[in-house]
Length: 370
Image 1: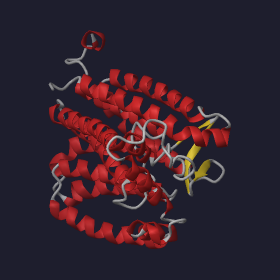
Image 2 (image 1 turned 180 degrees about the vertical axis):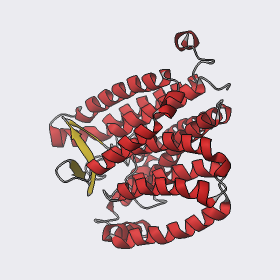
Image 3 (image 1 turned 30 degrees about the vertical axis):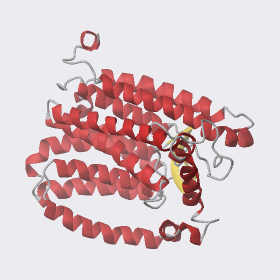
């Protein structure tokens, strides 16, 4: 049906398609379960976040189908314009009175009753542009001057603008995704070792330049040193996961969502999943993400051209890195970064852009023999 309708060689990857739908269903259910207490208290409507999440999911699914229908080669033609628009949005969000501040970061632009996060657009825009660049310049990628360095200038310019908001979590996801793509293109390990050394110094400078980042590192190492301050979120997250045991407390039976874990429908939604559905529920969600990663990598390997391979790899790398960071934060392996869990965390532009990304990935799958 899809081949006849859109004149493509193959049907889309149905396994990936239904994995995405399953994650959206789980996410919608858990957004409601984790948020109705807070929504009742703040908005006098226990369904406040649920209704908005359903709206975001609906818009996102339509966008996903739209991007799945458009040949991925189209974005190659407009990659320069897309990247320029993303850079302009990152500059606009920094203008006082236009950019909206939440949680200490000026990362949103208000659009009516909703808001958009330009850094989310930049992640996808940079993946598209870098895919074109690497496909054309791959033969020069082993050269620091001709291939490696120009790509770094682009990536770290975007990173610098995101850090001016500041949004370290999104910046780390963006840089890590681009590094995976550049490495896959054949960049030399020697160049990466130098980059890692410089990055370590720069990362240390970022941490030392902002006291709250130092406190986050300290609270990560020993959250019980400041249990009511910087260590509060990590401790409450662990208190949610621990009692969940094998089977969990049951749907809707979470205790930590009763104002212990701040806004649990966002970055720490996996903690509520662990509390209500236990080890088995958490394993089921992780299994869906593993399936997503597997199908995404397979699509990248079977894509018909270099641009398609880099594009698919960039999208699946972005999602996988974001999942790894979010869950590592929730279980206390790394400091709090403010990275959402794809498809599950409550959000507007984040969820919509994520679904647009997988729409492109699904379109690549329609030209790949899986």
